[in-house]
Length: 239
Image 1 (cartoon, rainbow, N blue to C red):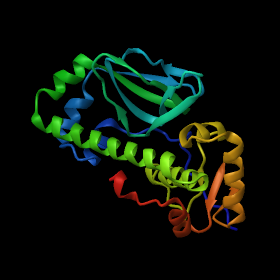
Image 2: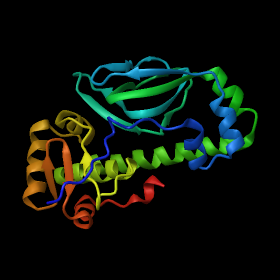
Image 3: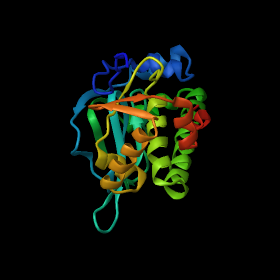
Image 4: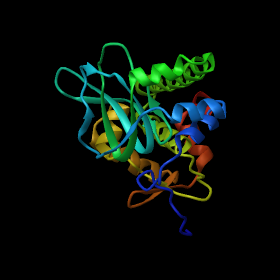
């Protein structure tokens, strides 16, 4: 098999905030106004909490590069990753304390702004409210899909669906490139509601079926159409 260049979430050089907002549907003048809001850039290291649950979340975040997760824990301390924020995604401020924590999956650069500055900009034009409502609807649709994925699909379909979603949200052309897998097996288990041992078995099974080929952390998709069928993956909810 010919070697294909691999886009990596880890090596993403970072995206421009205003350009990302315009690409998502915001008018250029409004995007520039939003970009001028006071903000600071932070580098977030993986595998340790960036924001703990149970504290006020009076800030807005924009993932300039990398990959963040939202997580919750049960009474026994077992972690469930409940959402992902890819490069170009954001986390909006909220009233009161947040019942979820935030942690990086890979080394990430995050722009942080204060809630009061964010709201001061948003209140200047009704188009902002419509724009962010649309983004919230998209993330709700992703959340519903995750609920179905963990609640109704079998273990193989759960992992396959996560891989298909990661490819799509990372804008990887599987005909030309491999996916650089950003997740550990434990993180995949924490997303799909399984054990890491079972996730390992699923990957081996996907390889036996000829759907993927792994080389280190690179995943080559051998039959993308069949992979989507196994996953019951339809990308409409991501639009």
